[in-house]
Length: 227
Ligand code: HEM
Image 1 (cartoon, helix red, strand yellow):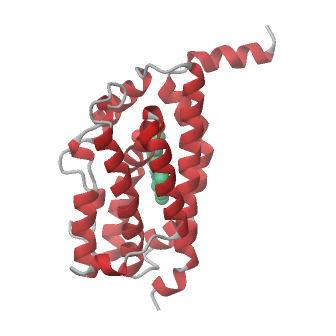
Image 2 (image 1 turned 180 degrees about the vertical axis):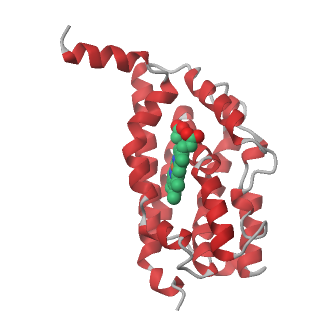
């Protein structure tokens, strides 16, 4: 058996969720190392920096959750949907707390947010598995790194619940069993090998869209730096 054969058979043995994680790991690490996130978590930004991130996040989740509602009766998508995940109401509460009740007036999509929302509308509505790819990236991220981020933001900005509701899943007190079930649902996805590859590619695209969004926010970082 050649080395190539060995590599191929071991790849086949991986569950889809494991393959997905392995083949998007580089994109995850790159996104995680964004300068904006580092500055935010290091407490170098004002609360306006957090509000700027949450405002763009609100525009993304509005589109993501709208697509989710459109797929509610789709058998491939429905195992992944849960009201406990929904973030739009939490984001509205955070933005009202951080900015005030007129927060919508100053909210404008950055160019990367526009591209992200356009991709969600294009892929998330017409391609059920593509929607799941975007759903996976956001909510599994929120239930994983998002929980570390929440604790760092609590420390850096002296916030408790208000302003951080986006990172708080009241209906999912224990992320681990929820994530285990989510991965089992990924493994049970009834899609062809070709569509599995397209799914993984879409997650990599989605990581890049998130990275671009952080880069756009970083472009305005001077206005959020603590003086
Ligand atoms: C400072 C920023 C971040 C940190 C510290 C972080 C940390 C982590 C950690 C420790 C895990 C593994 C959890 C587990 O296996 O249960 C994880 C998983 C994950 N993260 Fe992040 N992350 C960060 C940023 C992001 C961003 C920006 C995204 C996407 C926009 C993201 C998406 C994901 C996803 C989708 C997973 C699940 C991987 C899987 O199990 O399939 N993360 N993150």
